[in-house]
Length: 287
Image (cartoon, rainbow, N blue to C red; front, side, top):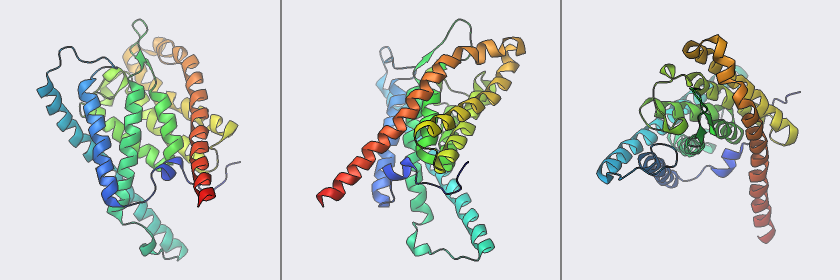
């Protein structure tokens, strides 16, 4: 049975509401790290041979603009949709929200942008861990692990926005996909899996918001999200390799790795929660 009460997500605890100036600086710093990383390590974790630092700085500046703009724009649109939804709910229920107690739309979008950019960078880092087997056009990567953690940590709404921003970065030319790949998702054999990331983040986040954030329930939530990932992934892959090779290329090789990633992800989230709760309890004890 799924409870209807939304729980506070890990992302809300790690990035609580605060001063806009602080989050503006944090957004620029995280964006700078993401931009510099993409410029210096365009493929996996191998440093460029004889890097031309002028080009690296130019690419990093361009990437910084893309990361920050995508993060802010998508976060702002997400806040607009959220505000409109709350307005409709107010009218239906006849309940007025106290605007003085909630952050402004722009400040809330700034905080969401930091969350989006941070976990987008996490997915990018995991995407660098990729291995190709034979002529299989779809590599085995750590992307799925990053997406599962994103959905579990941020919840359904921000999980979707983060994966959308991640796809937008790769589609704009940033080397953020598996093995430093990039391009329009509909032109990639693995593009269906990118769309599946959005669905996976939503489903995992939706279940976590309703109490499926610990133990066996979290593992089941991630398993459901991981299974749904393959629906658009296999459909798009079939257009590139044919249905006779789709499951051999796009499903069977990934099952052992997915099981390992599910196990790691299901342990990681409760571990971070334990650290956060310990720090909170420790502060209360010493006050």
